Image (tube, rainbow, N blue to C red):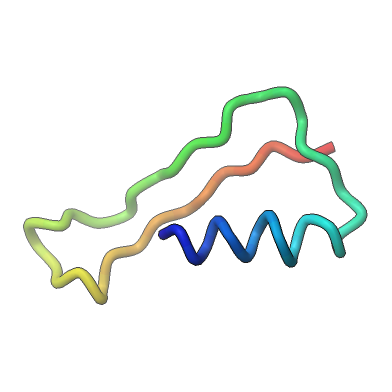
Length: 50
């Protein structure tokens, strides 16, 4: 997921005109790694914005 975070912080956030809130970011895992292959894992990244 490092590529996703790199893109969010280096590309998307600076161009979005938004700012991070002083809150914790978190990940929500949408499926179970014991049940699906790594290429099918889904995760939502919650990034609190102003």
